[in-house]
Length: 512
Image 1: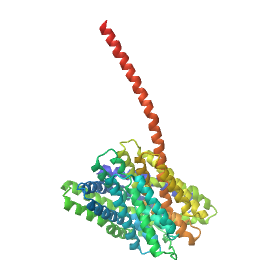
Image 2 (image 1 turned 180 degrees about the vertical axis):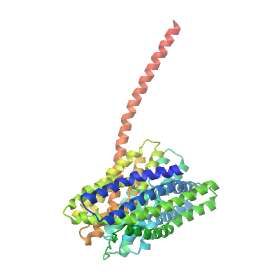
Image 3 (image 1 turned 90 degrees about the horizontal axis):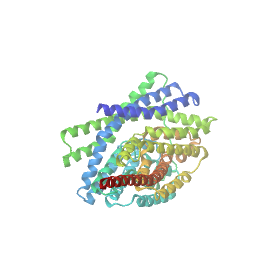
Image 4 (image 1 turned 120 degrees about the vertical axis):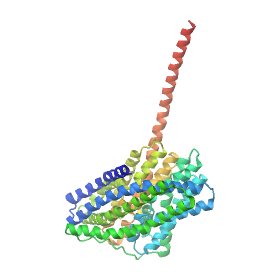
């Protein structure tokens, strides 16, 4: 357990360190920041590393085994009504515990926070229900995605125009470090019951569908509330002058995070205890291990969110506003691309997906390659996001063509790449995106009246390119595989000829 924690902490260090160095370099060379804000950022980065190490260790120990076991147990009876009910409840429960959704619900104006949380949770519940039924009934993921994306585009056209970016952001933030591991493991557990040739391919795609449901449900909410006159209230940058002021900010935030994370994670603990009472699935030793894992997850979430809430949000908002207000505002475009390339490595859910992909594909799809293509896609997304903020490009002009391209590529890649590619749209939009990139983009909005249109939607734009980049990777890998097959056949034929000649020579020698 200690070795696992050490490994995860070192992994978190390697993920967070590049972003910390980039931001620090920019505040020294391009956009000087007050020393107090930078102290908040550096202490926040330290908490981020420790919190991510604990969080990913706890998720591996608790949420992933629990998700897999629930997936197996609920599909064994083959009772569709039970499967639907469990899937819907688990979707709602897991989304309530997602820290990224908690952040977004505090930022969105015009709608009461709990109303937005319930709406998004219902959307995730419906999506997970649909995703589970797809695996059990062996329905092609491409067909469901085409139908769902078509409905989503129609809703985007008729929904209030300044609320559409918020709706797309809701779909991105709901799949973070808590939801993604659980959902991916649950998909593997359900698929393992089928044990047919394509069951492992169908285990992917759950996260992709769980992104779509919240977008639709929030758009429908926008039609009801129609928050046209809502105004955004930017986050307050704390005034800190001494190291005591810095530590006081974190000391005040920690108790709040302990309470907030207890409120958001207790439904998952309740599901775990109920599952144990009903099935008696875990022996004492295994039960204690899962309980310790939940403890790690909880403490990791508290430290992680304290770091990003106190340290990363103020620096993100400050940097965005300072660069946009200077004569170097076009630096936002390359800076956004640089942030995008490295921010993917800092997302805990990305590491979970990488391991899952390598395990399911038996190493055929390298996790490092998935990381590279994801980083490249998000770099393009954030560069386009900064360009959109500076020029005022409508979000539809970027999202819709990218969706069409992603859907078109589905017909040219192996099925397993389609599920993985659309899952990545959810995993790249985790805590780093919602708590640093989103405030950075909002701060960069020069016109305060366009914050709802240009600032929000950043999470959605980050999620739009990974399905394209991962499917392009699938096209290249499939082509390499086709080219490798004739070469292997040729080598085999040559070997057979040589063996035949040797045998023939031996036969002739024996005859003589």
